[in-house]
Amino acid sequence: MKKLLQTFKNIWAIEELRSKIIVTLVLVLTYRFGTHIVLPGIDPNGIEAAQKASSNKGLLGIFDMFAGGAFSQASILALGIMPYISASIFMQLMTILVPQLQKIQKEGESGRKKINQWTRYLTVIVTIFQAGAYVAYLNSPGYAEAILPAYKPFFWFSTVITLTAGTLFVMWLGERIQDKGLGNGTSIIIMVGILARLPQSLIQEFGAKSERAGGGLLIFLVEIAILISIIMGLIILVQGVRKIPVNYAKQIVGNRQFGGARQFLPIKVNSAGVMPIIFAQAIMFLPTLVSFTNIDSAQGIVKIFNDHSNAWYMIIYSVMVIGFTFLYTALIFNPKQIAEDLKRNNGFIPGVKPGQPTADYIGSIMDKITLPGAIFLAFVGILPGFAQRLGVTQGFSTFFGGTSLLIMVGVILDTLQQIETYLLMRQYDGLMKSGRVQGRQTVSTTTI
Figure 1 (tube, rainbow, N blue to C red):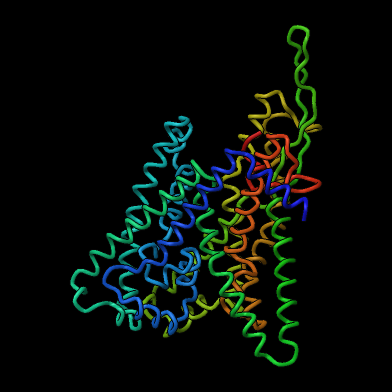
Figure 2: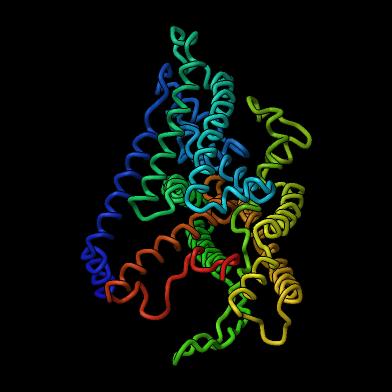
């Protein structure tokens, strides 16, 4: 306890770090305050009644999770940061697939500014389409009664404008956290939205188990222990790397010798991160759009894809996650580029010829470690379905795996790593007695 208090004192003693933490907290609180402001023309009491009567699942549940409950509350920030995430993913894929965009991205700071500006424009377009769909959702039975009759002629236009402005405001908050705060602004906003649901879900699960006879509280404690074990396994998945030894040729300049030391090229076990799960969910949620405004009446394949605990859903979902893991890893990981960078810097892998043999060797290692990483990632993705089948409430089951838990673990590790970096730079001890906190950014598969 004394060590923990001293660590907090050290963190607060660093003026720059203290300023970043305060800015981040203020901006996050601003975002959370905005999620409770109801859209114009809607009766808050009617929305509360509709929220209790409905149970958002599938696509709607994912939106509500990322928006921190703002989606089901008909907030001005109901769409949250998701339109910006969708636009960013699209632009990221385009910069990989379109040679012209690759050239722009390699122009340095000016190229990145162009890509970011185009991403913002695309965010506006995506937000307008999603806002229109959200208005259709609010006009469905249940939520439609909460719309004030006198405001209905103006409701569509004002809601689309308000939701678009809300998303742009959340995007601005994320950029401010990135520039003035602890960094990872978009990820922190998503994590805060996910964590906002944790206390209520935990209370609901505790209440459900307390009412259950025959050791309900013991089952609740077992669930908490299992959740902690899953989090530990995810930390291993996020931080796991395969180190390839790399030697650099000696260079003598004057009386000084450079190079000659052995280093390691870290290859991440899960290079694709959370992207395969996001892609798989996006594809599998497409059938639910058929009954977007009345999911409860869905039948056949729509009903299967909307039920996370369905066996067919979990099988198809696992196959898609594994497939997207290999696909996305192939898009972002370029062994040939790494081999060329090694050759340019007079580096080589012992026992492997430079050039194409090095690229083939790195590629073969990547394929070998990607398979177990993809299988484990798919298993994590379907864990909420297993938890729900075993009696865990729907809200609490989402924290047993899937996108929410992966994002939380990754963002928390990144934030702790940045704080520890500031401590070590000021000659303080790190956050742990032994070892270093490693986030997702400490390992890169595309740079040497």
